[in-house]
Every structure is written in structure tokens, then in C-alpha cells.
Length: 114
Ligand code: 5GP
Image (cartoon, rainbow, N blue to C red):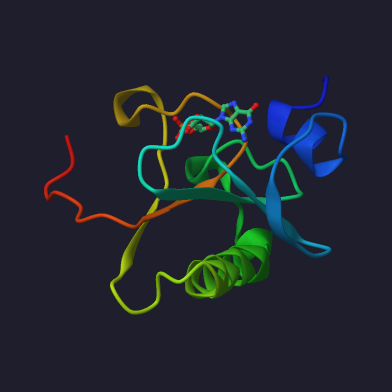
């Protein structure tokens, strides 16, 4: 199996505006932002989507969520708020089969989402 698009971003084979990285996760700005701040936080491990995560991924997924909140705060979203989104599968609008947590902020969000 070839690398996913997001694995290539992790490995710096495709350029991206990386705002945070460590040995487990990478956060970079979305190429087509849907809010004034739109960042994707991904595990380096290419889990396709949350529906395919395994019990052994528990620590990694906890780390990813805590880092998403850290990144949101570091980008100035801590006070007014932000939304974290995981799109799983076709009906949810998933387009890249490598788990990613969207951080969206900088504007008021509607609820329920469309
Ligand atoms: P999904 O629709 O799967 O939840 O989200 C995939 C996201 O990846 C989309 O918001 C899309 O704009 C973003 N994306 C797709 N290709 C690239 C790329 O090459 N670079 C970056 N930075 N974002 C991308």
C-alpha cells in the first residue's frame, strides 16, 4: 500500500503549513479553510478513520485530542471557543482516508451542522 496524502505531509514529501508536531501527531493548516482558523491534527500512524481505530490506539487518540486543544489555545481560540470535528465515512463527508481531527475557529459555528 502506498502512503496516504497525509503520511506524505508528515514525512515532508508534500509541503504544508505545520503549526505543531511531535513523535505521535502533526498539526497543519487546511489547504481549503472553512473558518478563519482551520487546522488538521493527525496521528503519524495511518489509522484510516475513527471507525477503524483499535483498543491499542487509546493512548494515541487521547494524546491527539489533548494536543488539538493545546494547538487551538496556541492559535488564540481558547477564549471564544472552537469546534473539533472527525468526519467518518461517506455520509459525514470524509475525503482523506487518514484519521484527522479538524480544529475550526475564529467565527460563530452553526448547530446542528449541515
Ligand atoms: P475530510 O473532508 O476528509 O474530513 O477533510 C479532509 C481535509 O483535508 C479537507 O478539509 C481538505 O481541505 C484538506 N486537504 C485535502 N488535501 C490537502 C492537502 O494537500 N493539504 C492540506 N493542508 N489540506 C488538505
